[in-house]
Each structure stands twice: as structure tokens, then as C-alpha cells.
Length: 286
Image 1 (cartoon, rainbow, N blue to C red):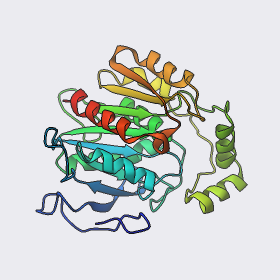
Image 2 (cartoon, rainbow, N blue to C red):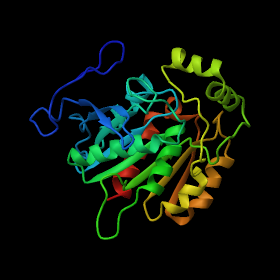
Image 3 (tube, helix red, strand yellow):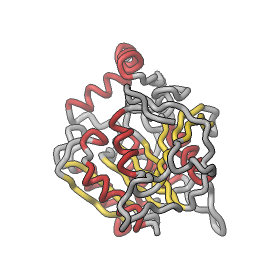
Image 4 (tube, one colour):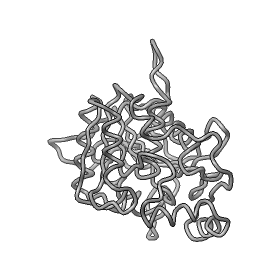
């Protein structure tokens, strides 16, 4: 598989255990527990890296993109390129996004999509998994870590070993900023959902949540003792700083909070910060 001039990922039929593993990513469709097909890509560790800091071959990052993203978006691919210097990377398009099936539930049933991607990372031979989510994906990695835990006396394929949540909301139904008011129009109104479908390649479910899923601030206390990193920008136009502070306070001592000079989610995360996230994930779960 390669990246074409338009930034799209070209499919490959290579095996993760073949001699071409180091150079050839793999693309496939996963199936969630509720039967949705999820477009997914595996990028093995980069063959170009700092000799003093080789990739952790036992670790895989699983990237959960933000709302209206998908595996082929340039900002998502940039995150992948940065993190393959540290480990293998699984990316996927949430339901309703890109080539995946189903419709977006804006963070509710998306935990099933993430669980399928984590299980695939383990099938590829990675003993450790670090989930890294942005915005909507940031809330999903928190809820996933709270809901998919190691079973007593054993391990589940879908659990994570380390969690990084970037630009996540702390609570649902927040409308305190202009971007979030626009997002609520996009999600709740027929005209907004049409804009999402044709303008952003995002198919949004028309049904409201019933029941309302566990909120991020309710999820974080249940993640312990899994290492948790909360990252948020001091210029985030979607969620002000009370959101990450609420999450950190609810998480307690097992979480770290980084307030960074940036805006919102993948578009705002710089290479230096991605390097620090990669370093943190490699050491925190080791």
C-alpha cells in the first residue's frame, strides 16, 4: 500500500508477518460486534528512525480520529507518520465516516469500532496497545478504556494498556462555544445532516441517544490503574480549559494533564507534541 498524490491510502494485500511488513501497510475492513464494517489501516513501524530510540516492536498505537475525519484525511495521516517512528499504528474510520459502514452516533457506539481496531492490533502480534483519540475520538478512548477492562485472571483482546485523550470534552451537550453550536446544528437538524453527508463524507444517525452513554468525566475514574494522559490546548475553540481540568480531577493520581499552546485536535497538534506523546506512551505502558 502507498499514499497517492491526493493523500489517499492505496490498498495492499501484504501480510503483517511477511518480509515486506516493515515497508507495506495493510488495509482491510473489520467487523464490529453490532455488525458494522470499519475501514482500517495498519502501518508497521517506520524503517527510518533515530538509532538511539528504535521503535517498540511490541507496541501498537490505535488512532481514534475526530468527528468528520477518516483514515485518508491528511491530518490523520500526519499523526500516523509521526507515531510510526515509535511503534506500529492502526488507524480506522469511525462508523458513518469515509468508507466505513453505518452512521455516526457522535461518540456512543463508536466504542465498538475502537474495540474492533484494538483487537486487530493484537491479532497483528502486538502485546501492548496505546489508544490515542482526538476530540470525539478523545471521548471514545476514555469510554472504551472504562468499559473494556482486563478480566480477572486473563486479558481481553479489546482492552487497552495506555490511553491518550487529546481535546476531549468532559461532558455531553456542551454548547458554550460557537463551533459547538454549529456542530449541534450539524448533528440534530436534517439540513445539518445533509451538509455532513455531502460536505464532510460523514453520515450522521438521526436518532437521539437512548440511553445517554457514560460521559467522559464519569468514565475516567474507572480507567485506573491504566496510565492516562489528557492533552488539551489553551486556545481550543471548541472546549475551554474547564473540560480537561474536570477530567484530570475526576481521574485522580493515575492521570497526567498537559495544557499545551495549541488549538483543537489533530489539526493543531504539532510534530514536537506528537513526539512527546510517542515517548510517553512507550514508557508509560512498559
